[in-house]
Image (cartoon, rainbow, N blue to C red):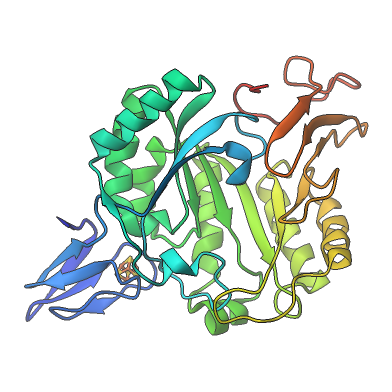
Length: 337
Ligand code: SF4
């Protein structure tokens, strides 16, 4: 446990957390919506500081990040807690309940990353993932500072639900982000997620403006957020920021409080076609079919990067450009293969 950043005293021992747009007003002895930031005696504390629920070396493709150091490995670390309460959460065992954790310091985490790099040279750095990393703000920031000083990259896999000021302080430490856009529709955010869509879009814009490499994930839930016009609006908005922002349309499976059947494959293919009219790179994830995760040159159709379920299998690039038409492949960093 550590005293939290980003809170204000409201008097009478009440505090307001200003880390995320939930803006929880918290009385002594109670946590905020995320269940990991608690008022103790009129001060706000991070309960999950140093509490590691999961730590594992992953292909960067698993985040998913397809255009940032393709084929590299990242040390993925996560804790528990989330600022959203998605009824369909695919990770609810760590987002909504407290799992068994190991206590680690930021120094220990970065030392594990360094030892993994000695063993696997394609380990390029850290990914803060599994649960929502912004509700672990203090620990992520300290790890990211140490990682950056050691020459490691920092990747954030996030729901994007953070206020602009704390994000502004974190962004200089972050190299790439996968941001989860849960829906285009504000009503879906309010009804199913208990949040708002606008702050998430603001995070995408803020990160892209700051020069962070951004990819966007979108879990397609049948009958909930799969309307053609919503995907068209999402893709149009993203294309105005940068049409090279990759969009990952992910297949939903029943989890937590949702028992709807998995997303039909034709729905994913239809939505990929709609988004692909505005964006250069649209992928289908959580559905393992050859070609769904390949990077195709948007100018001449050459397959640039071939992927299996979660890993890079083959690269056909000429100095980060298409070998067919020489169009740049919109890739940041080295291709590790
Ligand atoms: S980070 Fe947690 S406590 Fe703070 S406003 Fe968001 S949900 Fe509430």
